[in-house]
Amino acid sequence: MEVKIGVQNAPREIVLESTQTADEVESAVAKALEGTSKLFTLTDEHGRRVIIPAERLAYVEIGEPSVRKVGFGTI
Image (tube, rainbow, N blue to C red; front, side, top):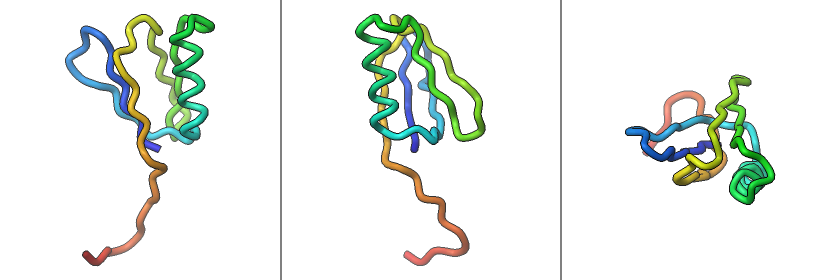
């Protein structure tokens, strides 16, 4: 699933493909914003972690689950 993260005072957003569900991502955002965790952490599909200080989060956009297409598609 594609996740876009806006960080305050950063010129670009962070875009990653995560294996976490939308509910898991939403839960992580909620914990970071309510102060339970001072860091917002996500893991991408390759196992790399993205760690952002919770007070620097501007927005988090959670996309639809991605489906990989194989071969040539028709329009």
